Structures are given as C-alpha cells and as structure tokens.
Image 1 (cartoon, rainbow, N blue to C red):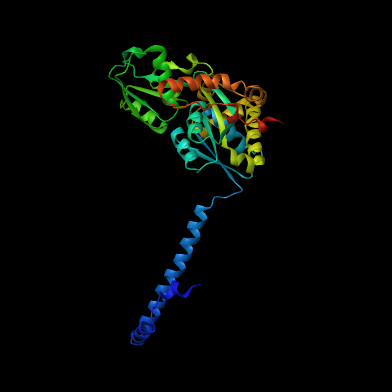
Image 2 (spheres, rainbow, N blue to C red; image 1 turned 120 degrees about the vertical axis):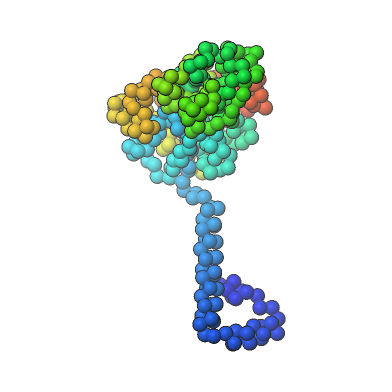
Length: 352
C-alpha cells in the first residue's frame, strides 16, 4: 500500500521534522485516536474503491433480460419459475413501463429487451446493432384507447386530456386511432404518463382518455371505462419482439438459445396445463384467472413454427408487417429514417 494514502504527502524534510515535533507533544491517547481515524479512512477508501469497481464492471457471465408488465411476456416468467429451461446466466429485470425498458436498454443496464415492434424500431434507428431474435405475440384487442363514460366516440375529444406513454407503444396506438377515426382532430392535450400511472389517473379523472393495455385494460373496463379503439382494428400492426445486441449474440449464444427455448417451453405448458398456468401467471400479475384468460383472447401467442415463418425466409415475412409499421411511424414523425432490413433479424435461435 502506498504510505501516502495513510499519512499524506509530507513534502520536504523540514516539514517532516516539524510534523514530528508536533506529534511528540500529543498525548498518547490523542496519537492513538489520530492513528485510528486515519486507518479507518484508509479501509473505507479501499472498500468504496472495490465497490465502485464492482459496479462499473458488469458480470460477463450473465445476460440481463428486461420486460415491462404485460401478459404477452408472462410465458417467459412461467418457464423461469417452473425451471422449464436452463436459467443459468439469465437474469430477469421487470420494469413498470415500456419507456423504462427502452431507457435501460439504451443505458446498457439490460442486454435483452421485450418490446413492441415500433419500440424496437425506435431503438434500431440510433442503436443499429440491435437484432430481433424472437416474435412473441400479436395484439388482437389487448391494446386500447379507453374513455370516461361521458365521451361517446373519438370525434368528441376536442380539448380533452389524453394520457399515454409518448415514448413507447401508446404514441403509436394513439396515432393509428386518430388516422382511422379522427384525422382532423388536433386540439387534444397529450399527457405523458408511464404505464404504472394509467389506472390511478383514469379513476381519479385526471385524464378523459387513456391509451393502455392489459392488465389495466380489464381493470378500467370493470370500473366503467369505455373502449373507443383497440388493436383489433389494426391486425398485425402491434407485435411484441425480443431484441438483443449483436455483440451479446456473439458472446453469449448459449444463454440466448436457452432464453428463446424457455419462451417455447412456457407456451407449451400454457397450452398443456392451462388452468394451472393461468393460476400461476395470474398470481404474479395480480389478475384472476378469468380476467387473464380474457386478456389472452386479445392476443396471439407465437410458437416455434410461427417464428420460423416470420423470421426465416428470403425475405423474412416479418418485413412486410414491419415495413407497414415503419411507414406509419415515418408518416407520423415518430421515426426519422428507415431502419428495417433483413440485417436487423437474427433467426439462429429458432432451431430445436
């Protein structure tokens, strides 16, 4: 250990002699106290240094998988909790909102992210090393625009307050609802709010309309909310995918293969043991089985063969759906350049 860490830099021999004279006049207890303080500072510095060093160096043997709360991602957690796949080297990080997942991925807090396709395109435009490795589900009614009882339809929203996640799927759903039903409507007040605020804001009438999804959708309908628009009207446009960085794919292919196989194992258990699966997933999501079953009626979960059809081939079938979404995002100004090509798709983990 460098002595100057404990004692400081004494400088010239004259300064050293002066310090010795001063120290000699101290009482023994004062000397002991001084030594203890300096020793404590030294040890504390070492501990903090080691801790900070550990924080700045991520565990190279573990991939961090980020998701928000959404029934469409739940088969992954079902498979993890039931140990239906090898989870060694795979750590799940659950966020309360999709915007938090996007932020964590950009900050490299997580390595893999479950996102909607439009959110994935947002990432790819400024992080082009991001690859789509799995398609998890299509939304077929689970994403909605819900209004208070006093609103009849989307044409009545002039001057009204609309709550949505402006940096995530909510912006896309809102843009599509306006395109189809109220293209001339411009004077609404958009209030950016993350998913964990949707239910409270709606029930407290802080907003007139909220763009949301399950499980909040079912909760707000039960409380009297009125669905004005849903993803049933835009089939194939809202797609959930799993993305990872190309560098991670090259470094940790076995963990990613286990993760993708875990998705398929979770789906198989859900299909084979539906009642038990709904009970376990509902407990984690804080939804009863009936509500969760209804939520799954509003989405199409995709297995291995469907994934091969979407992500394999020349060109991959997902591109036709994806380019439609990309064009809509470009038109609405949510995306500023074309990013979707065959190069952003990696289907290597779909084989048995």
